[in-house]
Amino acid sequence: MAALLLGNVALAFGPWFVRLSDVGPVAAAFWRLALAVPVLLGVAIATSGGSIAAQARGLWGVLVLSGFAFAADLGAWHAGIHHTQLANATLFGNAATFIFPIYGFVVARAWPSRTQGVALGMAAVGAALLMGRSAQLSADNLLGDLLCLLAGVLYALYFILMARARVTMAPVPALALSSLMGVLPLLAGALLLGERVLPGNWWPLVALAVVSQLIGQGLMIYALGQLSPLIIGLALLVQPVVAATIGWIGYGERLGPLDFTGAALVAAALVLVRRGAVASGAAAPQKEA
Image 1 (cartoon, rainbow, N blue to C red):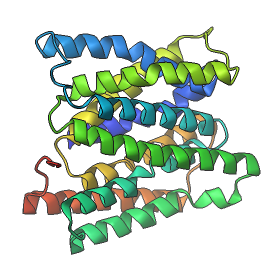
Image 2: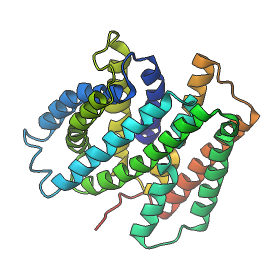
Image 3: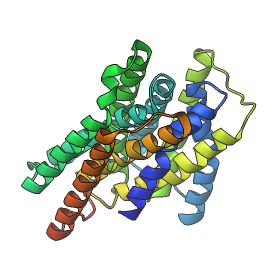
Image 4: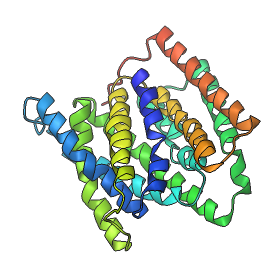
C-alpha cells in the first residue's frame, strides 16, 4: 500500500515536468521511456540472474501490446497536458480509476460488496468535485480533457495487460520489457508530427524519466501484483489531488472548498476499501486465468 501511494505521488509530478520541457509532448514521452529503459534493463538483468527472456516466455505478445498501449497513452496524455489544467489532465488521464476495478469484478465474476460499492461511490463524487471547474474551460482546454480521457482508457488497457504479465513476472523485468516496446512507436510519432525531439534543457526530461517512470511506474507495477484492481484503481485518484496542489503552487490554479472536499472523499474511499480488504483478506495478490 505504501508503494502504491508513493508511486501515485511520484506520477503526479509528470505533467509538471512535461510542461517544463522544451520538446514536443510526444517527444517528451519518448525521452521518459528512452532514458529509463537502460536503467530498468540493467536492474532487471542484475536481479534475475542475467536472463529476463525466460520470465517473458509465453508473454511476448502481452508485453508488446502493453508497450504500445502505454506509448499511445503517454502520447495522448502529454499532448492533452498542454491544453488543460494540471489537475484535470491528471484526473482524466486516470480514467482507469473506474475501468480497472470493473475489469477486476468481471474477472472475479462477482459484484462489488456493499463496502466496495460505497467506496466507489465516494470516489466518483470526489472525482466529480475535483473536475468541477472543467465546465468553465475553453474549447482548447476541452480538447485537452478529451485527449487525457483517451489516455485514461489506454492506461486501463495497459494495467490489464501488465496484470497478466505480473502473474508470473517480477515487476522490474515486466516494466523494463514493456517500456522497451514503447520507445520506437513514440519516437516515430514525434518525428511524424514534426515535433522538436532534441532538448536544449535536459533536466525536466531526466526528472520525468527518474520520478515518473523509474520511481512512479516502478512502484505501481510492483503494487499491481500485490493489491486488488479496486484498490489500485481508487489510489489513482491520489494523482489529481497532488497535481492540483502542484498547479496551485506553480501556476496559480487555485483550489476551492469543493476541491478540498473532493480530495477528502477520495482519501476516505481509499481508507474504507483498504480496511475492508484487510478485514476480508481481499488484499491478497490477484491470480488470473
